[in-house]
Length: 168
Image 1 (tube, rainbow, N blue to C red):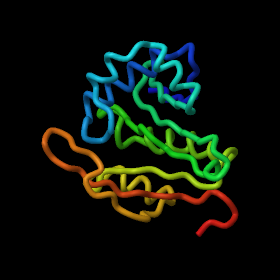
Image 2 (spheres, helix red, strand yellow):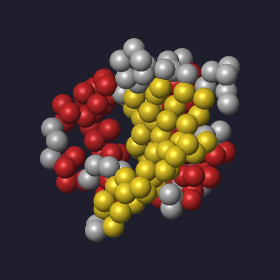
Image 3 (tube, rainbow, N blue to C red):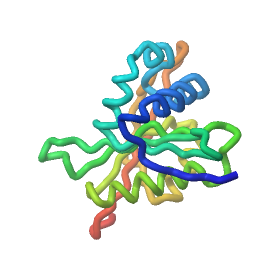
């Protein structure tokens, strides 16, 4: 098994679409979007997504097995805050460091662009919460009913990690 992680660009929109749909189909309660909506989107939408945010993909032996993204707003008053989104690793690649490696790649880029990163995670996603705490994230709130999936509401913990010298 040879794991590699890299940021993808607009010319690799099909890779983004493929791993994103796998994520949405395999773990629908973890994402605000749904597979059908994104399946119907044109490939150009995914290409634009790689322009609007930094999309990292984990590959094993050349096949995409995971992803994570970083969005940095262009508004001056909030440009110090990046949002990490879309972390997903295929089930057969979990618990071997792939998610941590994806997060490390995203955080490394974030350090060059922002002073803190935020993310949201379902309150019952114990594996993700454990990873985020290990990586230095702190919970700063909980959004009740953040998602409504298959007739049930899902609360999300809102988390932050400070990246500047004024770590709290």
